Image (cartoon, rainbow over all chains, first blue to last red; front, top):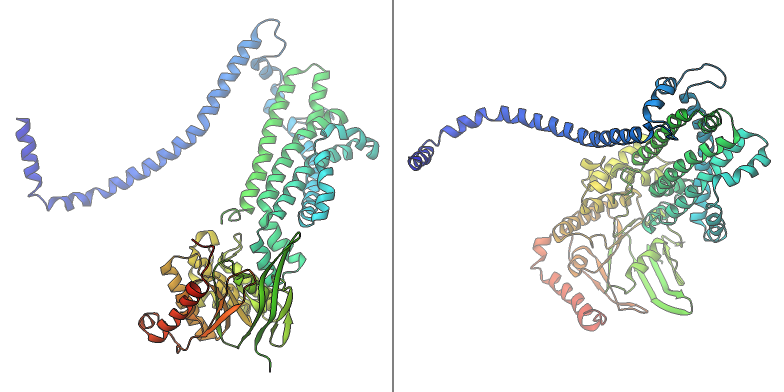
Length: 302
Length: 264
């Protein structure tokens, strides 16, 4: 019985050749809709697959932390205690309740301001010096060994010297940022400049570009991927250094807040501050990486 | 009476430490205005070095190059080069690559609108206007070479230097570009010096073929004048007796009298 049904199906489909076009006319619309649907679904799946795993991990980690620190005699506060005790810090980053009682958003901004000045100077100075070193064999030979030694020095080791030199905490903190982030910028820029292909130099030579034009039109775009690698390492190091520097110099920054919270035994506040530092550091890195991908588009692809 | 472009007793010796390698020996060549000259030889015979000396990118050890009565010893837009590997700047669009050259060469002489028009005109000459806003990484090898050609032409050079411009292209693209170059030479009357290792290409395009002996100390072995009238048609030449004879002369020179010993 089944056999005969199948057979008749086949035999029916052969003579009814004119019917498929009619069917095909109806098919496209639902097809398009399903295509839209699948694209939407694919987008949702992509977002979900990016967001859900870290969320699950955060919940798991918080639960584990909660369980570990809930016991009596635990040295660190559990998340629930942090939530209740540091509630004002969490919900409002920008409150002002007194000269030293301000939201963490303000403190982060103060720290960022210092980083902006120190890192900005480091970027400017680092790219200029890196260009010089990349261009000149003798500058390279003379300065590279010195830089290789200096760059290993911890940011905080510079602090006493800068305090002695500037006699004020603000410029000292800025100097520490500068001195921390300048090395990777110098070194990467120099490598980028040295790696400019001979082809581009030939083009510049035939066009008789002067030094200024060569710098802006060939050197900087060609070395941009390297420069931005240096800038990205630099911004990470600056953010590491500012927290440490502020712990020692005092003032309003996020680093000093942690030190102050420790001295007044406000452990929950410290955890919130750490979260702020981590998120801001992540955002800074993303910003520089985003700038890099805008500026260097097309440069690396050949 | 001096010629339009004279390569005068050029020697090139490379020194590395204590070893000296003589690459070119006693190269003397006169190129007439509007002439298309090809330099052919086995790889390593120093033909690219010779082109670089004319371009000013490499310095001759002795001797020199005189262009329109002036000694040239540094690179300049009057000797525009089309490089083998196109050498377009990857961060600039096709238009901007040509515009960079136009701005540099005509910055003081032409207005902004004129420079724009001149850039587009040269892109149009090589049929690349359609891709003017693309970046070099988005176009094919043949197209890149066209843009390189447009950039060189836009400089209005006294002599156009082509350094194996079609070397990295597939045969069909190469033939197409050869026709483009031939057409442009016909139309604009440029003086051209081209490096090649392709016998057919040399015969098809050139007024004269300079055959180089093998290095070290390569010399001009023989100069062949190609007496084929222009415009030349690729398909007609395939059976043309003069074409075949010229081709045979070059092949004999390269593969019998100056076999490349190190090859194979």
